[in-house]
Each structure stands twice: as structure tokens, then as C-alpha cells.
Image (cartoon, rainbow, N blue to C red):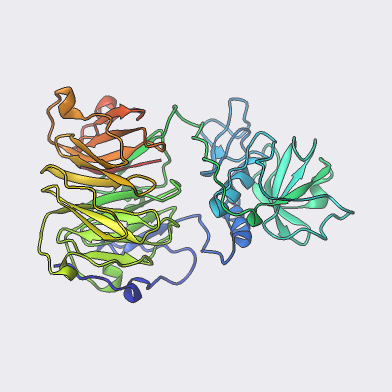
Length: 447
């Protein structure tokens, strides 16, 4: 039986901002360009910009999720991912605040404007401000993140890279137009735009039991075989809340973090289990919940809201976990379709037997439960857009569901990497469609 991890124990963290822990026993792997948690959004903007140091300049590249392939005229080379002269602040500001800056030289309508003032223009600037050059403040040609002392992080020009420049250097090419403090604007209600670097619609990543990751229209952040790590017990995969990385979890509770914060693991705490089946991150990506087949919940830098063993309930068929938007509750689903709600998670009903996964709506007002036969049961405000039994398709190997960002559809994923799309779910391809034969896919995430 899995142990219930109290909050005080789960909060144990590794020392240092960047951690690389490779262990065949599953202690964990943390690979991330993301900086350590900052005390303020102001410093976080600077840290996110600094985390991209050395990324090449690619005209038309970069956005809220990081570097991307540039346009056809880009000088960085085919397939190379990078930023252009305006997209580095787009990434840094979004990652730190949730505010989406347009990349077309216009302003988003939030933030505090700081006019140029008198040369050297630095009197009213603070670290984390975004500075603009060329044209006008509403139709600019270059932007950068202010560090202090007249220096900025930016990606300036062709054959360059993300690095520190002085304002005086940039003024040799552009006229300084002013700055904005977005870190004083609060959270934006702007919906982040979909990526434009791949096929239309959201993509997805698939993961095998060996930690191999297959990318379809999404972001690739690494895999265990790519690191030379040999395992065969990966049971789950979950994307970060901001879809800019992912976590893998093994049956022993080993957590592998790719472009995501590593917050320890069960082997790292000396806890021995072999029945972990799911993982879900907190909304700030600096914590996660694990769940075992017995309904034991382990919280790492996340609110512990009890578990089935803690309530004296004995089961051995839990298949997955989903969390509420405020992280103060979660749902567990058993293979018999039973739903268990904890904290502020609301119970909306049980699903048919054969359940293999559960995922919640963005507002926490409902959930989808998926069966191995491709059935989809929608509860609360979750929309039902059809399933495989409705189409007369007979399968028994569905392992997960990827819901569209607008909750207007979903893709069902099979253990062979087959993908079935419903509603506005976009099919970016599948492993059978590529002629790849596997039978060990255990999960998928949107990206």
C-alpha cells in the first residue's frame, strides 16, 4: 500500500536551480532551461530571458512557448529554432506573468508606459521592464528585457544570438521609443495564441514505457532513451500547465522532468512503491501529485487533500488523477469507473467500467473519463464530442485523451500510437501512419 505523503515531507526539494539527476532506479531527471522560482514577476521576466542565453537569431522564430523555427528567409538555417528581434520578450513576459505580447510590433493594451525621458533614458527603468526601439511605441522594430545598469537581454540581428547588449549599442541602429512595465499589470485575460510553427491546431506528444517521446505538431523537450537512461516502467506523462515541458513518472514514483521544475520523487525520499500510475502538475508547475493503484496520493510542493488509504478505503484499480484549477482538490478514477473526489473537487458521477484515464476541464467544472474501448464519458461542463463505440470502431487499447485548448474536442491515443480525433481535435498524425510499430505507448499530452 502506498504511503500518504504529508505536506511537510513532500516539500523536500533538491538544492540548486538547475539539477541533473540521472538514475536507473528512477530517482529522477531534471532538465530545464527554466530559472528557479523568482520572488517577483519582475525578476522572473529577467530570469526567463537569461535562461535563453545563446539561442540563435531566427527571423520569424520564437513565441510564448520558446524558440521555434523561423520563416523561409531566415538566415539561421533550416530546422534551427531561435528568436527574432521581438520575440524574446514575448517568451519571457508570458512565462513570468501570463501576459501575451503581440510579435507584430504592436502593444497588447496592458502595462505601464515609461516614456524615453532624457538620455541615457535609464532613470525610470527597472529590471524586468520591456524596452522598445524603432518606429513608434505602437509600431516598433526591436524589443529587449531590461537587466539594469543600461543593459538588456535581446536577440539583435542575423547571425547573432540571445545575449546582453547595452542600450548605447542598440541606439546605434534604432531610436529608443520607451518601455512598458508588464509585471505591474497583473495577470492577463488574453488567450495565448496557438503556435504557428506547425500544422493548424494543438499538437501532442506520446510517451512509451521506456520514456521514448514521439512528437506530432508539439514541442520536443527530450526523452529517456535520448539521455541513455534505460527503464521500462514509465506509467504516465503530463504536460506542464503552460505546455512548455513535461513530466514522466515511473511505477516506482521516479519523476523525470523535461524543461520543468523537478520537485523530488519517491525514490529520492526513500519511499519504495511499485504501483504509481499517474502524475498531474500544479498550476504554477512547481509541484505535482502522484497517485498509486491503491489511491495513495503523494504531493510534492502541492496541497495534500487526503487519499483512499487515509480514508480507510481499500482498492487496487486506480488508473489516473486530475487536479482542480486551484490545486486544492483532485479526482481519482478506478478501472471500474468509480470517481473519488478530494478537497474542492466536485463529484459529478461515475463512468462505465473499463476506465483508463481522467482529465478535467480548465475551470474544474467537469471531467472526461476514457475507457480502453475508446468510450468517452463527459461530466459537468465537459463536452461530449463522440467516441469510438459511437462510430462502431472496436478497440481495446486506448490509454489516454488529449483535450483541445478550447475544450471543443479531443484526441484519443492508443497503445500502438494510433490517434482518433473528435470535435475540433486536430489529427497531426500517428505512429501507425508513419509505419512505426510499437505497443508500449502509455500516455500523451497536448503541446
